[in-house]
Amino acid sequence: MDQRKESILFDLKAGNQYTFRFWNYRFQVIRSYQVDMANHKSAEKRNRQAERRTEVNRGNRSRLRTEIKKLRALIDSGDHSEASKLLPGTLSLIDKSVQKGILHRNAAACHKSRLSGHVSELATSK
Image 1 (tube, rainbow, N blue to C red):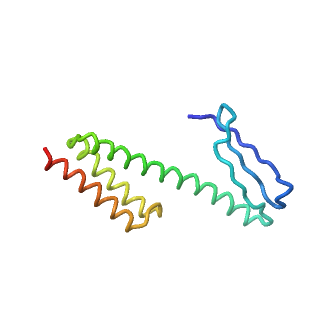
Image 2 (image 1 turned 90 degrees about the horizontal axis):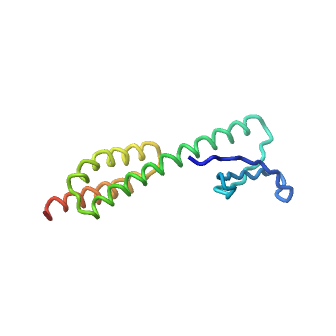
Image 3 (image 1 turned 90 degrees about the vertical axis):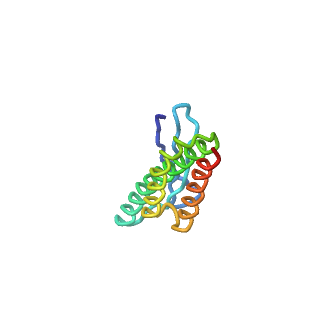
C-alpha cells in the first residue's frame, strides 16, 4: 500500500478553486484534481460526500475490472475448470455493479453473455 500525502494548494489564477494533489512515497503525483471552493456549509458537505463517493466508486470499478481480467486470463490459458469456478462470482459482481451504477445494464448483459460464451466454448473444445 502506498503512503499518500495530501497537499491542498490555493490556485490564485483560478479564483475560487482548490487543487488537490496525491503523492506516493517517491513524491510522484498520483492524481490531481481541482474543486470549486464552497461558499456555503451545505456545499462544503456535498463536496466531502462527492469525494467519498468517488473513492468508493473508483474501488468498485477497479474490483470489477480486476475480476473480469482474471477470468479472461483463465479463458485465454484454456483452463476450463478454474474459469468455470470463477465465472459465477464474476457474474454476481457484474450484477452488483449494475445495482451500484458502475455499469449500464445493457453493457453488463454483453459482458455476462460474452464471458459465459467463452467459458462454455472451453468445455466444448476439449
